[in-house]
Image: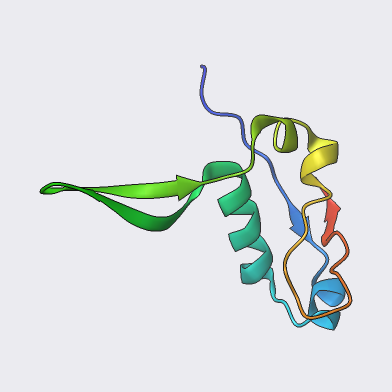
Length: 85
């Protein structure tokens, strides 16, 4: 049976908490980076379209690259937050 590939991600909750993040925050970053997130709406006449953003393929096509995703937090810059993929 063919289907979409799945990626099981385990968030390092202690490390995330040190930076003021919870697992939901980390999951939101990963979801937006991999699958896309609606950033705005575009109006064209009477029609309305979602503007979806996501990482380019070179940043989301390898497990090693996905493991280095970062979330915006107050300084200092956030470290990678995943313990395993």
